[in-house]
Amino acid sequence: MTATLQAFVQSLDPKTLPRVLQIQSGFYHGGSLYDLAGNECSLSTGDIIKITEIKVKKVIASCNEYTKMPAAELSPDFPGLFTVVADKKPYNSIQEIAQTLPIGSLQPTLYSNSKLHVGDITIDKGTEIIFNSVEEINGIKSVRCTVIIGGANLSLVLPMSHIGEFYECHDEKIYTMKEILDWKIPRNRTRTVILKDITGNSSQKHFYSAFIKGMLVLKPVYEIKTLTQYGGFFNLSSDLDVEVLDITQHCHIKLFTQILNTHDMFQKTTNEFPLLAEILEGPLKYCKAYKALRCGKKIIVHKKYQADRIIATESSSGTPKRHFLIPSCYSGKFKRRPRYFPTVYDLNIAKKERVELYVVATKSFHSIHEEFSSLNVGDMLQVKELKSCEIFCEGTKTVVDTLEFTKGKDENCVNIILPLYVEGGFMEIVHDDKQYSISELCKNFQLPLNVKVSVRDLFTVGEDLLANTSVLTLEEQITDSYLLVSLCDKPEDVWEIPVFRLNISFQIMGPFNGKVSSSPTKTNLEEINEEEYFMVRRYENHVQFPPPRPPKTPSYVKKYKAIIQEEMPKKNENTEQTMENNQKDSIQACNEGGIYSRTMPCKDAVSEQQ
Image (cartoon, rainbow, N blue to C red; front, top):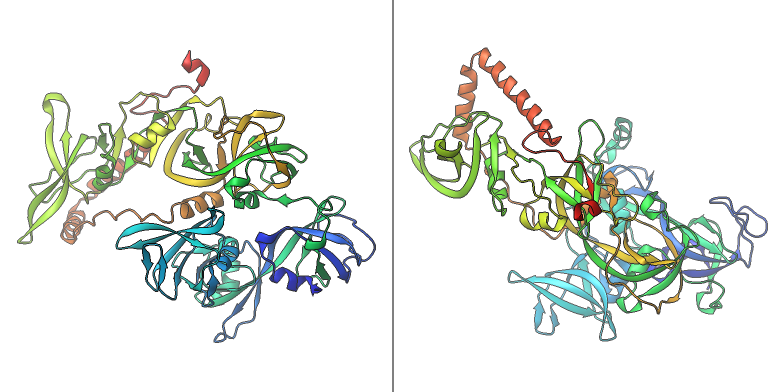
């Protein structure tokens, strides 16, 4: 059935790509066949093209019926921050949910409008259901889900054939425009959002200030990436005045070969791997690690899986921060570097580590209770254990959580206690000269943790990006999606490529029948930009609960501090300023490896083994 290109794209399910179309009428840059120049081409009636990818060209933002504001045309990288309004339109089957929402790259949460019975599990109406992954179980395509019932996480499987009314759950997260377009606007639907703020320059804020805190309806206008019969890609806007006919079912199988990107490849079931593929378009992101993935190269895709990564940030002053994703198979070695702890509460969290924790005070603390000790700048402390202490404040007995320390050295040491709310500022003293692997650091210490590379990894894809860094802060352990690949001409070198940060176009050549690897033999160290850094931090651990807040300083202590500060002579203020400057100098020196620890040159793994 003939349709306009715009109508066809609006009804198109991306998971059914690629689709083969025949031009029925209309033209684009008149003339006969393909004169390719970037986004330009000529189409004639009867020409056949293959749609391989859909992406957003622009976004039409219109206000709701209660706001008399004209529609605005926004770019996909519009610097706004939004909250989304739950879609009131129901999903009528599990198959519709799986076809519409990006299950796998995201874990959407919905609820059923009626009670569900799945095996021995009964799910009440309105209970949140987390959709984790699409799988083939006993030959039946299904969705693996998680529900929380009675405080317990229960896993269940819902077949695609299940019918019912499912609605989106309320979502309070803040999203960028890119995140909404990637994950929160299902195909052939609009999305109602609330613009909370604009992160761009002042002119953008002024122009769009009328929209802030207002409800907007976002409608994407798409651009399709197409392939000709004779090779070569070009882009077409979905609102182009062209009529097309879908001939995918009637097209000869050899007219076009199957073309997928990294995300499409990851959507394949586990049983479809390993695959042999040819790269049609290499990654746009330049990196020495990916220079071998160029057009025309044949690769083996061994399998898809989830792999652990450690988010690391280089602690350097005066230059933009660099961010890295370190795999658990990284074979380099690290040495610890001092950390800074703002409060006693932070010391209590860090004391759970398997090594003794020593710190030096960088600020003074004057206690108004005789049960607590005072601190001077330079006092050396060893962290002991958490204790509860009874004190009298304003005539009332109060129980306060405290931390016990050993103050001083050798025979001059004394035991003291400090309340968890003390904002003393403590710099770690590192006596440890041991070299650790990345897995040992994650096992024995609490993140974040400051380290420096002492032995480089000789088995990285490309150079070891961490070898020339100064101090690295290991921030968080995450799980991400990867494809395990190797080049056909070097099958022994197997490494991981990220699914959502690297876009490559593959031509599937068929199944691979040779030797298959289950783990990488090469380490893929990723350096990620600022946007990618915040994306992985926000979404990879979105199920986890935030850490507890540290205890607040009691109001009577704040009043006491205010009185003391008012009575302080000017001389003491100058002294405090000098202490703060000394503190900053000591922190900077520690971060550069100049205090409490020796700086060792980075060695190769081979020389270390010798």
